[in-house]
Image (cartoon, rainbow, N blue to C red):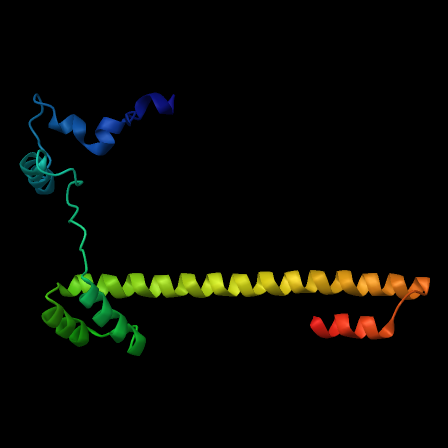
Length: 159
């Protein structure tokens, strides 16, 4: 009986998102200035570009710019704001593009180190597998009486 006295709340996606307030019959409208800007931006660039709304075009670095950035990266892979601003002035780039370049370059370095470590582990595991196989074969030959100590020593020295 108590549940009949409590007003029941109605939850809907339209109400949660506020889209039921934007219908023409409603007196309230949500304040969303970014939606208007996006619509204007989208209409202005719809025919000239296929980029997503708000996405900036990709920066194409020249070889000389990359060479300078790589040289700086070898000395300091975490340049401060002053160094990034100096680079921006010299390379005719925006500072935030230089910051992103260094972030991407550090990620590339970490990925490269991870791949190198993986290759080293794979090589070590493969070497262990070969060594165990050769030792197993030598043991079988020794047990049978056909083992040659000199041959075993030569095989072991190559591993």
